[in-house]
Image 1: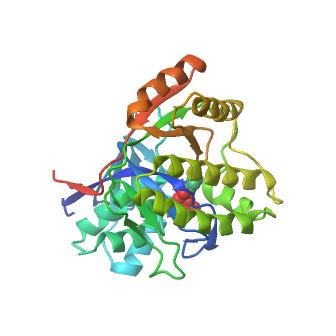
Image 2: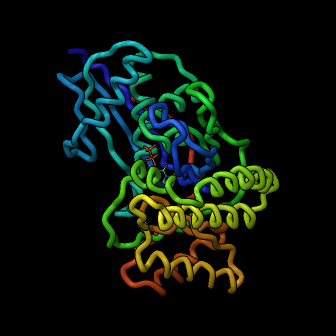
Length: 320
Ligand code: 2P0
């Protein structure tokens, strides 16, 4: 067997404008464009090498390879055949920050496989391929802020970097102990699309997108945070108003932290909340206020774990 290996590193990303619904499930085309921040502190290293069959190890533990195998077969059909692969993935996250994500994993896997096969692909092409593994992975190839253009077909749906920003943004990541049963993102967004308010959320997202891009260009972090919070809370309202099995990712502490963030604003902090497919809250703030907000959060909530995350780099390859 061939001993060749290839290792890629992709950082995770948090959406400031969310992807929450598919207009084409087979192609994984989203109903809205989304906009994210890549994080320096959270990333995945993925190594691939020839194996007897497609297998997956994450942090040294064997995993069910079904989803990865399906994605590798998609790459084989799309780009050309390659042997069965052993996929060895390591999620690097500060102790139990609860942020291990399919975004960085599928981005790193796509890049590692492309590198292994000597495919000469642009970041845009890698992003388009990674979309078929997991939507949020499209955005994990780029440093700082990235936009995933919703597109209208396979070719036009991919992410790209926004012009380099010097915005001093930080996320104060608050990890809430899980109390609710997890609904997968794919299932959750499918249910959300049955909300009577879904079309209005999509229309509003299109409007917010232009305003947020202008705010980023103008280094207006206050507006970026305000729109991100509005977009995220409206996304979670869709889950609660779904006509098919309505649900919520919020726990009591999620709601309490949202109130805490509002209180921080009253005290003069720049602070806005964003929440993904789980109960954790990420507080969007300025880098020079992040440490103080972290201390206040730890003082206000027992058992909360808090990490500070800052803008991170794009894709890299790691030589053995
Ligand atoms: C996002 N999330 O924009 C949104 C907001 C979570 C909440 O993308 O079905 O794992 O694999 O394309 O990418 C998480 O969903 O979903 C996600 P699939 P994915 O970051």
